[in-house]
Image 1: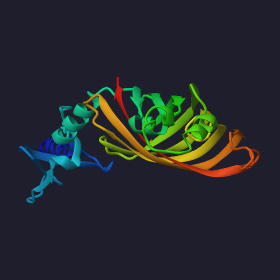
Image 2: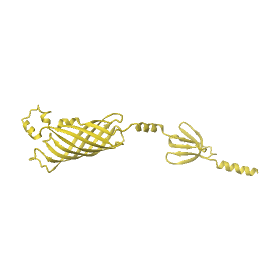
Image 3: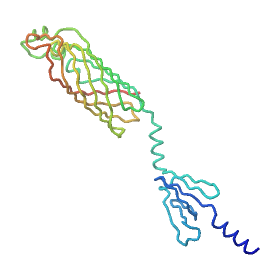
Image 4: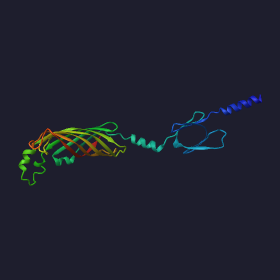
Amino acid sequence: MKKLIYIFLVFAFTTKAQDKLYFKNGTLKNCYLISVAKDVVYYKNFDTSATTTETNKNQLVMLQTYNGIRYIFANDDKKNKVTALDSIKLKQNNFGVQPFNFLLGRFTFNYERLTKNNKIGFMIPLSISFNPFESIYKNAVDTTRNNYKRNHGTGTNIISGFDVNFYLGKKQNLKYFIGPRFRYGTDLFIANLEGYSLQTQFGLKFSNPTRKLESHLSLGFGFLRIVSLSYANRINPKQSYVWYSLNYRIGIKW
């Protein structure tokens, strides 16, 4: 009878349920838990082992004891950082102006709609073209002023098109972007030129996620195709010409 009891105790001892450690690298370790401190978990690899091993909590996902109690470990700093970022709702709309275009005879307004993750923006520009030589520069001494009246045209005209901006980078305050830029219309500043241009645009977006103002600075390279021109006798309207643009806009997002 004593022998039977001894065998039963040995069997119960060897089949004792073990605690489990779940590591962030995907491994699972069976062990015998000693204690859980503030930053460290102490355990033994074997119940009869005299050596105690310790593991930092930031290496663990979860601890499950032999009786089913679970301890979930999380990196508090990382968790708070993600929560703070997720609490900011990304704004998808932007209405802006290009103030320096006024010196080139354009009132330019832009509306941009971004995807939910702010990775792609679709922008529609609208420029009201006018002859600056009849308003801004009218007081300048120029003996050919009458020619400017004739060649640059009078009144106003429209230039429009579209941009597709692909925003890159992980920083929230600074984004790089690249994308196609298309324009069509009549520019009274450049000899009453009617034509269309296609460029590839490279730029930077300066934007604070918690503020409404943001600005864009970009440089575009491409070609221009002329439809009509006051100087048609000097320039072939059927030929394409190298074209570039330097653009700055400031806007309000919501």
